[in-house]
Amino acid sequence: MISISAAYRRYDISDEVWTLLEPHLPGREGVWCGKARDNRQFINAVFWILRTGAPWRDLPPSYGDWKNTHRRFCRWRDRSIWESLLERLIDNPDYEWLMIDASHIKVHPHCWRKRW
Image (cartoon, rainbow, N blue to C red; front, side, top):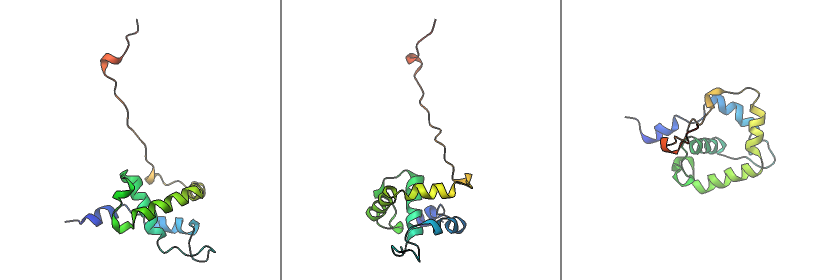
């Protein structure tokens, strides 16, 4: 039987994707602002939230504290880090991560106006 942690860990980013992202992230080794010890864990937490649509409070504890993760997400948003990552990596899009919203709204037949 698969444990709960293994069930959501299977959606974490692969080593291949991580090697593409890591050089562009703040807090990497050799950068003036210091080294972040958990950039990969943070990225996985954000992707988990995006994939599930869950509120931040429901973030599994193995991804870290939800408050700190949300605060860091907002800091990256305010500093346009997410946008710069997208701009740098968009040259070679990976359609595996493409998500399309296919929702639609059905209208009750009585709501339609008849055109004569």
